Length: 106
Length: 120
Image 1 (cartoon, rainbow over the protein chains, first blue to last red):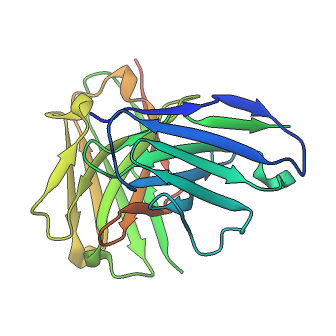
Image 2: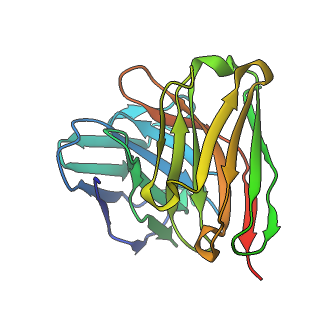
């Protein structure tokens, strides 16, 4: 199974800050990497797919990069509505696996 | 509006069974892979199973193999998860999820979830 390791597990930031979350895969997954946002036990929302493609309707302050085993999600200027938990997920092979999540707090 | 609505969750005793259903609307259900993803209380997301459009391929996480069965009825725009031999560790919110993409796949539509509690 492909293990996905996210860091940090949590972070504190302020409105307007630049935030970067890292996700590492236990083996190369090319660009088969997606990012999701989850707020307060609501259903997750897709932000980025195929490592760097912004899902329709997602604000441009969100961006993704990386390939192989190292990926990052960047929020350029944190907004109040961005405080949430973020998950990476690999779609390279089954079982599909998620990172443990990064909680972004005020 | 693209929508997934889950039902069938509830309280069940260890060793019991439950069948989850998911009804899709607003898109051509038969054109998509579909998944079940669960989230235990206070925990992260865990993919459970998925099924190909024509039902020829099904995959499961190891922890549910032999106990859970994923199925679909394209004529009814419905996805199912039959859960047998339930354990306390199966307690979670279960999400029905659409998988989009043609080369790179991603989970682009999620239901609101249905809660399964396994307890005596």
